[in-house]
Amino acid sequence: MRRAALGMTVAALIAVGACGPAEDKDAKAEPPAATPSTPHSARPGEIRDPKAHISYVLPQGWYPKPPDAVIGLYSSVASTVDPKTADPTAKPTADPKNPLGTFMVGVVDTKAYVSKSRSMPEMAETVGRTQLELIYPAKAQDSVRSSEAARLDGRNAWLMDIECTPEDKNVAPFRLRVTVIDTGTVPIYMLSSAPSSATERFGEIESIERSVRF
Image (tube, rainbow, N blue to C red; front, side, top):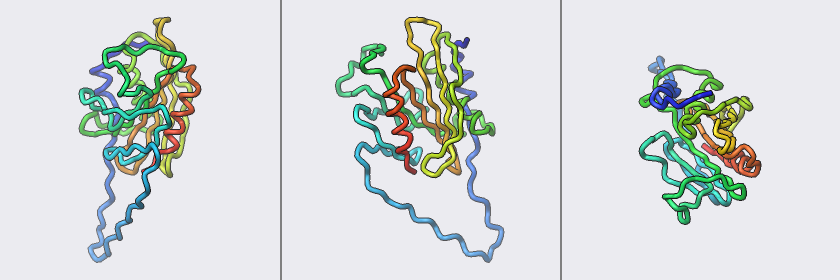
C-alpha cells in the first residue's frame, strides 16, 4: 500500500550530473570538427520538444497541450483530450469507449532534484513511483509489470511498466510506462499512462515512443 508524501517524494526524484566532454590536455592537438546536425523535414503530426531536444509524432486522436506551469516537471505533454472541445471544469471519468491516454516528456534536472547517481533501472523506477504519487495520491498497490533495456533512435534506454491498482474499487487499474533515455549528457524521461484494459491506447503510446528522433 502507499499513500502520497508528495513533498518528500518529489524531492527524492532522480538526478544525475551532466557529463560534458573531457578536457583536451594536448595543447597542440587540433580541436575536433563539429558534427553538423542533420536537418529533417517535419513529419505529419510531429511535435518538437526543444528542451528535451527530441521530436515525436502523435497519432490521430492525440493532442498536444501546454505543460503544467505549476508543477513544471514536463517539457511537453499530450493526451487524447481535445483541448478545443474539453470542458475545463469537468472531472475525468473512465469512458470505456474513449479511455484517457497521456504522454509526457521531462528532463532530469540536477538543479531541481537531489543529485545522486543511479542505474537506468533505478532511475526508471524512481521516476515512475514518484509520478504515481502525483497521478493517484490515494491508497493503491503498485507493482512492476516489466523492466527491460531498450533502444530509441540509437540511444540506450530503459523501459518499465508499473501497474497501479487503487484500493477504491470504483477506480479502474491503470498502467504507467516509464522510459528513461541516456542522451550522453542529462537523461530525459517519457511517461505515458492509460487504463490497464486499454490495449489500443498502449499500441498508440508505443507508436509515439518508436517515433522519437533526436
